[in-house]
Length: 285
Image 1 (tube, rainbow, N blue to C red):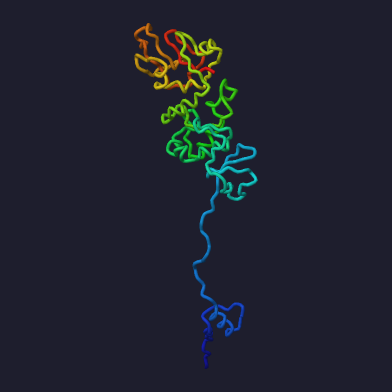
Image 2: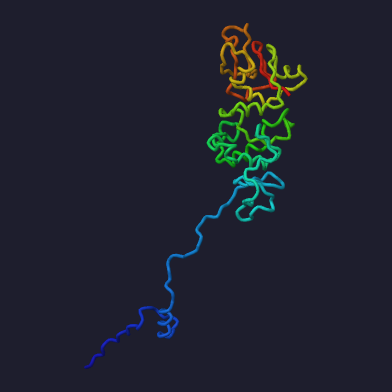
């Protein structure tokens, strides 16, 4: 009885697959003369594309976070950046003394200049007055926020102090504010010391003016009060709608006669506040 030996698979001539049934001789020629394949692609840029943040308030112009100003038609549709031509950090239409501008976009551009705004200071400023508010996250956020109309640029709640009402200076309650910036924010304001028991409404009215309530916080600082009042009994923290003020000399001893008073609770400051034993320091216009 004879047995058939099992069929053995033929070993392919080439150690690779040839699913297209190409002539083996032709395939060898192609492989021999083909250039080596490199795993590294050359001349391919791996740089990240830059994208800009921009202001959105203006009708015709915008400012990107590089400090460039351009019209809406010039902005790059992909990167949202302005063309890098012209002046960067332009302060066109700005009063560098008061740090106020007559244009929102140029206010932001000027503010973004590192020589104008120090990053470490800007990032310590609160976005809004409530205690729960956070800090600005970038210099661009600070500039875009501060240059919008704020309470320090208006008088009587509904009128601007001047055409330069886009301001990027530090808030009045910021400890790093300079005396020059302070004086600039009081431009157009008359600081008048009232009589005993008078409210600021009455003090300003007697001079043919009105009290400017949003400037009370500027005066609510010991170094300011001491410039206009004697403060013989030092400068003390207190709570009252009549502050900033000075206690009259003939006041009862427990009221600290001669002392000047300020409050850390600025929400209580009021033009109509008064106390029978104090003289108020009033912003009038």
